[in-house]
Length: 113
Image (cartoon, rainbow, N blue to C red; front, side, top):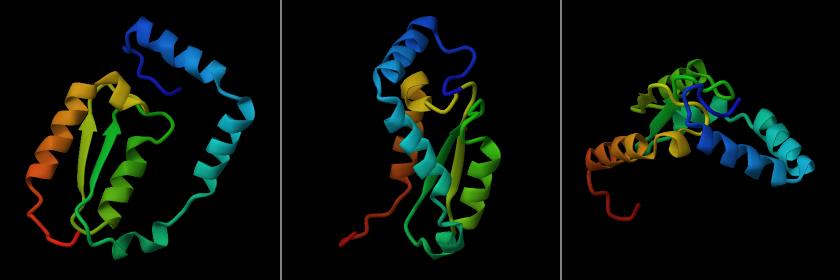
């Protein structure tokens, strides 16, 4: 569920191994915490630059949620990583790093932040 279909098999094996090494209660608590977390009523109060990045094959946090998130935060930018799943930083680190780098270059220097 966390990785895109075209993720290399060796990466899939590493992720699966790490997940199976993690206590099941920890994973469950993490999923429950994510499910309960909701600040959607306060998103319009965010006044700092925001980049929302989503894999187009993310099944855990589908693109529609990222679109909503970016539309509710004033001035937020949305970028997608084609063919990446929920673990897009592991799946396509170069692409994600480039998106972040380009985004950071657009932010003016703001002393005190």
